[in-house]
Length: 138
Image (tube, rainbow, N blue to C red):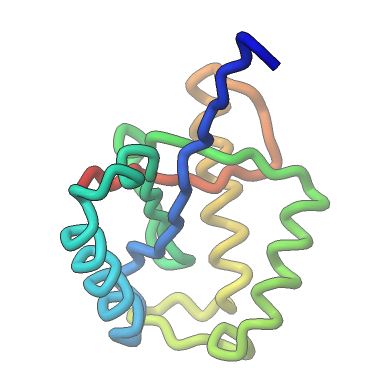
């Protein structure tokens, strides 16, 4: 078809930047990703690549650091909870560095709800929860 321009959607990479977790797994994975990005950044296809970092249940980005949010309905919050239950290391009281005795899924839900409340307080749309991301520029 003449006149049609093919649009390439950007490649999306999502990675945990939750370095406060009790294991070094997140740090090892993030360091590996950053090394791969450094090695590949001059490849043409990387111009269409976006890397989005998220936090786990322990910490959230400060509101001014958030560059993208994904709103979640109550049903989606429940789906996320069920997904957490499938993750062996996050079941039955995942280790936490501190005095917070809530289970991982409870901390995650509270963090997402609190982020949504902060956005609502700024006059933005009201959602049950928001997952927040910060873009990593390479």
